[in-house]
Length: 188
Image 1 (cartoon, rainbow, N blue to C red):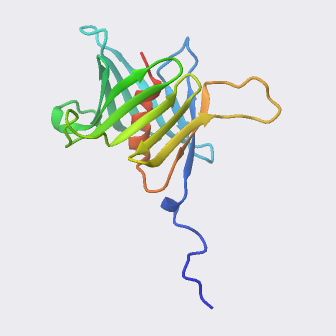
Image 2: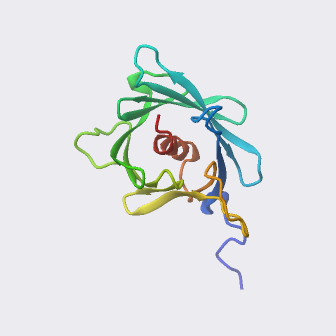
Image 3: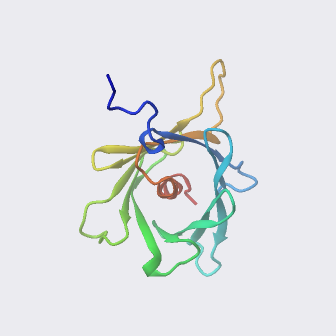
């Protein structure tokens, strides 16, 4: 009797894990390196520096493994905007992230995708968690889209907060998820 279910699920029907490493503080606290489950470089987030005209402005760039610019993230005041590639015009905005609450133990950020008014509509995504513990849950309405958590090793008593795991659940854009995570984990 033939089965109607595939023996091997399609790649987009299983969760995908990434290992994220944050650079040590003296080098660049705003530099992230993302590896796939095989240990190959997948993405990088590089600090573009802060503007000399506005010290509250921060620019970060998300690159793929080959070095192509995917998204440019700009923080001004308490709001992040993500732009396609190297652009930074209003028509190229992909998402806007606004911090609702921010403390050492719990942060909540609402993300609005472009084409939606952030003033009078529900957020497209919500990021909730503890940046200090490297824990974040990204939800879309009531569905978990992605999660991060520290990398634990058996028989190890001290864990590095520089390395953590990202699990992206099926049918979600990895680049968009990474852009949202940058707004959660990069504070200044």
